[in-house]
Amino acid sequence: QSALTQPASVSGSPGQSITISCTGSSSDVGGYNLVSWYQQYPGKVPKLMISEDNKRPSGVSYRFSGSKSGNTASLTISGLQAEDEADYYCCSYVRSIKSVVFGGGTKLTVL
Amino acid sequence: EVQLVESGGGLVQPGGSLRLSCAASGFTFSSHAIHWVRQAPGKGLQYVSAINDNGQSTYYVDSVKGRFTISRDNSKNTVFLQMGSLRPEDTAIYHCVKDGGSWDFDYWGLGTLVTVSS
Image: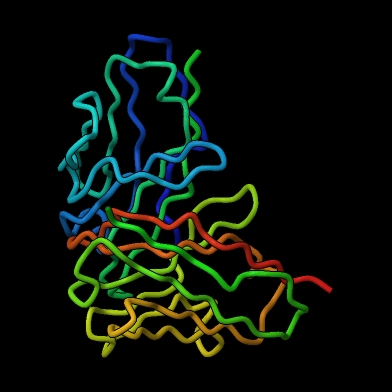
């Protein structure tokens, strides 16, 4: 049950766009449309930002979008704002365990 | 308003046991799977366990299999996580999480801290 691979950190300046990748395999990320993304501020509870690869729940800013190519899912944040500075986690269904695993998390710094 | 409130955490010695509870409200409890996700201090999220809507199907991550048992009481809108043979590496905040319907997690409890230490 290996975790999905995310970069440890990414950074960007206000107004820019950044992308966080989440790499798995054909048995998880690439095999199903079941990747979700979570935002977590320090000391706070994770918040669902994207579900089913690219669906944005009600109330989540349009600046957040999800996509996938092969076995790599991506979270893109456009028009970066200071309030976007947080940790981001991907999560995917995994066929072999019939459950999910999380990525290791990515710390986003807004310069 | 959906609410998930965990309780039962605390300090326990290695080898000891704890029973976590998750009291849910604000949604049709018996129609949703419930999950436990933990986060060790300064670390990432780890999926731990799940139980389906009627309690007939459960899942455990390999590291807790045989030591943890998840159950639910739909008459009381409550999920339980019985934790045994606890190890220092089980130290974490344990969050109760509502299933969003597509292997996603749309509502999270604040969590309860479990500390395993002598």
